[in-house]
Length: 154
Ligand SMILES: [Ca+2]
Ligand SMILES: [Ca+2]
View: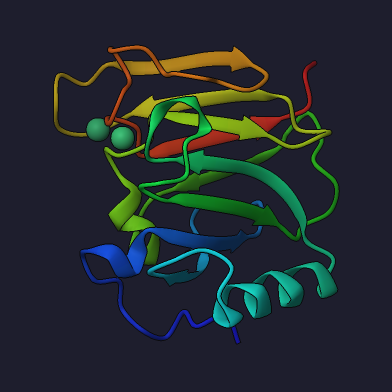
């Protein structure tokens, strides 16, 4: 199992996470988190995702510059290769603690195009479409994102 039966709780226990989703944004992600990276728990979750045919989509970082000190969240999809329709995730359930937190991210081939949304709270910055890795979101989206789509560029 992916450890999704335990409700998310605030704090360091949610700093390092592996999420696995289908392409259906309405289906909650299976999320496994821990208080530090590379634990047995996280390695097992990654191994299970890969064994199930999941591929890496994105890695989110709490800090700018892909700095891992405050946490990362690796997102996998297991509904086939990333294509022009891509994958979406809305940070509910066990992903909730990663809302309004992300400051940089990397995309994993072949997914290269990201749309990020600030859909609630704050000043509702709207959406932002961008290609490739993002070293810093810029002030408009920093610590404000709660939804992503990643896809192969059309
Ligand atoms: Ca942040
Ligand atoms: Ca927001």
